[in-house]
Image (cartoon, rainbow, N blue to C red; front, side, top):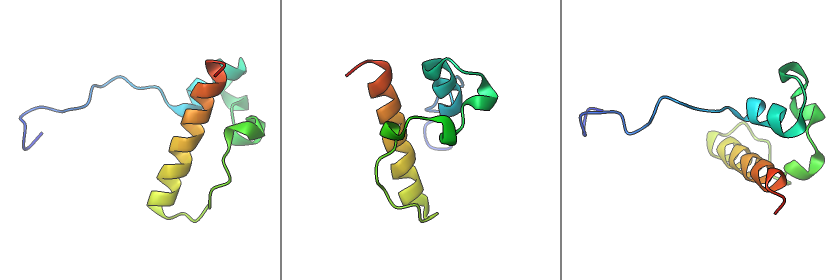
Length: 71
């Protein structure tokens, strides 16, 4: 905002847990990683390093989209 005068991001969003709830047709409380299909998770390191976590989250979201669209 400081450089362009307005936010480059919109204010609407959909978090991955809510997206999983819709794809899996479950309740929000049941939409945990433990209940998600193993095929949604790539074998990536779980290091708690921000970049590694971001890559894993991105891969998870891509796999969720792929599963939802039947690709």
